[in-house]
Structure formats: structure tokens, C-alpha cells
Length: 437
Image (cartoon, rainbow, N blue to C red; front, top):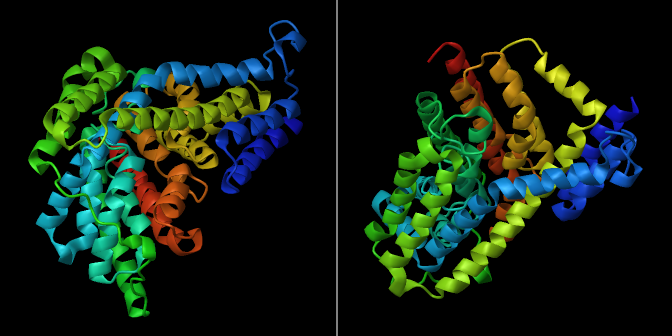
């Protein structure tokens, strides 16, 4: 009883602390300590008896293990995003897409610009920063309420591109070592759900914007909006080549190197960006440095959450909870999706949700004979649902730091695009897999 209360209480406290803005590197170990104390774990290894696992060892094994497995992928991904940003290549691609689609479809242009950059391997956060200034200009010209900008950016970044087959984003690659699959697992179903998220999300978002307009809402300018785009951008066709190189290299090497192929693919993207756009860089090595710092922060936050999960995993309460989830009636795809999305929601991290659940659920479901490709796609998509609750890292950064909006104004549309639409897509995916699509 006390163990279950400790597990639930630790998860609740982690959620509350994150929503209140506490750093995950502090909030996660504090919450994990509560889980450990209520479950009777000794604090240090010196206090453990026999083979008993202690709190510090459990937490640091999870933390360091995630760093060991994913550091180079986080690093190369963050650097690639930053050099694309610093050279103006990301902005050039975005401008070209927006120009071709036109002002009448401003929201669709922003969504597709984010989608192309995200599917090309640019970090979600970098995409939001890069496209936001153009989104402000387009919303101003269209007189759309600016509180819908975060939802527009998120629809193009965290839905049909982040967890789809072939995506270089880490959410699509984490299942590979656990399920022995490829980043193209379940590509047929993924194509259907990606189209659903794009079309349904766009139509719903436009409905909300038009409804707000009918109620008298309009675009309100701010002093810091008068930020002009950089002049002398590189050629958009040359700028998109590094994105294609990332996708091609990952495709060619994924059978041989599995998730390690992403390291070479992203490194190739960095090199290609420098070769093709080197005369446009403001400061190449500063961009590399900024990317490195960003990678360490993102990796540290995710590892902190994984450390929390590692402590939870060694408790009797967690084992009871997993036994309950895995014994639920119905398809293992449903229970697997449920487990991943709940953990991702409580931690505010899609990658954290997968990293905690897959080491336990993966072998169990594979032993049951579950189709690995179907499980890969379902788990990947599920991680991109409840991770975008109000306390999620991307939600907080995009709404507050980038767009300067309040959760009260911006989150209803943001949550609709990043939680409800992906949830419906997961239901569609599971249904299609179950009928043998």
C-alpha cells in the first residue's frame, strides 16, 4: 500500500514541480527519492543488504545509461539544427515554401514549413525558433489571432512528422534497439495516420481561428515584432539538400548500423550544410557550440526523467503496476500504447516515456509474438500524445519562451493539435494493425 502511494505521489509531485517551473535535474531526483523512501529502498549502496538495490545506484544507472546510449544522437541532431539555423538554410527553405503556397493559406504554409524541416532532421525547438518570425508576419497579414501561432508551429513539428516512419527525430529511433526494427517500421499505417493528422489538424485549427475571428479577435502587434528577417539568404534548393542527405544516409545505413546510422546521417547533414552554405554563416563554430550546449541540456533533462523511471522500476509497486498493465484484456498494442502515453504524460517527455517503458514492455510483448513493426509504430506515436500536456517541455518553451503567450490563451488550440489529434491517430493506427493492414 505504501509503495503504491509512494509511486503515485512521486509521479504527481514530479508533474507539479515541472508545471511550477522547477528544473528537471532537481525535480526528477527529488521525486524519485520519494518513490524510493516509500518503497523501502536504502539510500546508498553501503546501506543495502545482500543484492538489494539502493536509490543512488538505481537512479544513476538509469541516468548514465541513457547518456551512454543517446549522447551522440542528441549532439549531432542539435548541431545540425543550429548550423541550419545559423547559415540561414532553415529560414530559406521556410520562405520558399511559404512563398509558393501563398498568403491565402498562411497557416498551411507554416505547418508545411515546420514539417519539412522536422522531417529533415532539424530539432523541434530549432524549427519553432526559425519559423516563428515568419509566422508572426503571416498572421499579421492575415489578421489571425496570434494566440494560435504555437498550435500552428506544433502541428507541423510534433504530429505527422515527429513520430512517422522514416523520421530522423529521436522519437522514431528509440524503439529500434529494443524491438530490433527499422525507422520505417509500419510505414503503410504511418502514411495513413500522418495524412490524417495533417488534414484533420489543419481543418480543425482553421475552424478555431475562424471562430475566434467571428467573435471579434484579431492580430495584436507587439514592440518586439519589428524584427526583420536576415537578408541574403542561401538558395532554397541548395538549403534543402542537407535535409535530403540526412534522410538518404539514414535509409541506406539503417539495416547495418540500426540507430547508429542516425549519427552518420546527421553528421553528413552538418558537413553538407557547411559546404553548400559556408559563405552565409554568421559564426559556424559558435553555432556548433550552441548546439552542443542545447544537446547537453536536452539530454540531461531526459536522462533525469529516465533516472526517475529506473528507481521506479526496482520497486515492488512498479512491478505490480506493470503486471496489471500487461495483463489487461485486449490487444498488447493497446496496453503498450496506454503505458507509454501515460509515462510520457507524467514526465512531459516523449523520449522519456519510451525509454522507461520499452526495456520492460518490449521483451514481454515480443515473447508474446506481437508484431515488432506494429509495436514500434504504435509506441512511437503514443509517446507523442500526452507528452504535450501543459507541463511538457515543448509546450512550455513554445507557448511561453518563443511565442510569449499564456497557457490560458494558447494551450486550448495547442493541446487540440498535439494531444487530441495524435490520440485519434493512435486509435486509427492500432485499429489498422489489428485488422492486418
